[in-house]
Image 1 (cartoon, helix red, strand yellow):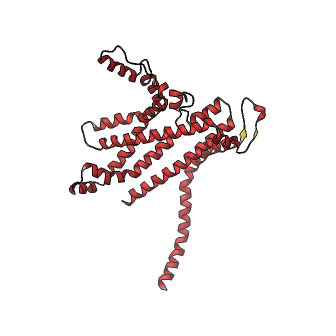
Image 2: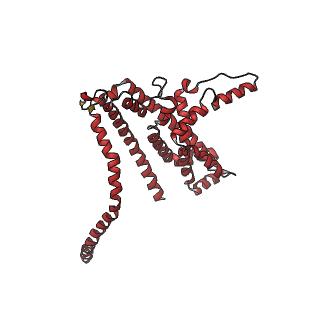
Image 3: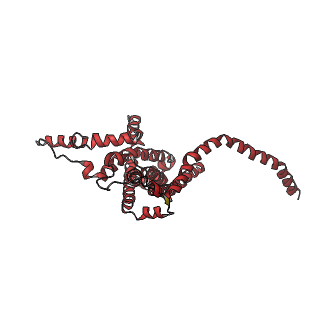
Length: 319
C-alpha cells in the first residue's frame, strides 16, 4: 500500500513537468512551421488544383466549352489506347532499367568492396555518371554515342570492320531501330552508380565476425555470398529497387531528347504522354487526371520504400 501511495504522489509531482515538456516540444517545432507551410503551398495546393482540373472538360482551343465532367477524365485515362500503351511502356522501361541497374550495381559493389590500388579513383569514376544532369546525359547518348554518322558505337564498329579489310561497316540508326533498348541503355548508365552506392553500403555493413567464422568453417566465396552476403543484402536490394522505381517512372528528359516517344508510340511513357496531352492536344482535364494517377501510383511505391527504410533503421539500431 505504501508503495502504491508513493507511486501516486510521484505521478502527481511529474504531471506538471510532463505538461511543460510537451510545451517545450511544440516550441522546438515552431521554427519548422514556416518550412511546413512552404511545402504545403508549393506541393499540396497545386495537387488540389490538379484534382479540380481533372474533373473538368477543358480544352484551350475551345475555351467556352469548359465544364464539370466528374470522373470522366479518369475513365479516359484507363480506356484510351495511347495511355494504355504509355502505361505498358512505363512499366517495361522502369522494370528493365531497375533490374539491369541493380544487377550491374551489385557486381560493381562487390568489386569495389575489395581492396586494390586505385580503388578511390575507381569509385569516383563509377559514381560520375549519376552526377551528370539528365538532359546532358540524354544529349550525350543521342549525339556522341547513338548518332549513325559520327557516334561512338558506329565509329567503333567501322574501325573493327577496317581491321578485317572492309572500307566501312553498315551504318546503323540505333535510336530508330532499337528505341526502347537505346533508352534503357542510357538510363542504366546513369542509374547504376545509385544502385552501386546503396549496395556497397550494405556490403560494408556486414558483420566481419560472421564472414570470418564462415571462412574458418571452410565456406568458399560463392557459398559465403549465397548464404550470408545475399540474405544480408536483401533489404538493400529492395531499397535500391524501390527508390530506383520511384525515380525512373518519372523519366522525361531521356524520352523527350532521345526518341520523342517514337517511333510512333513505341517509347512514349506516362510523363511524356501527359506532356503531349497537355501541350499538343491541349486537353488540360485529361492531362491532370493522368498526372493524378501517376502521383497515386508513386505514393504507393513510396509507401513500400519508406517501410523498407524504416525496417533497415530498426535493424541497425538493434545491433
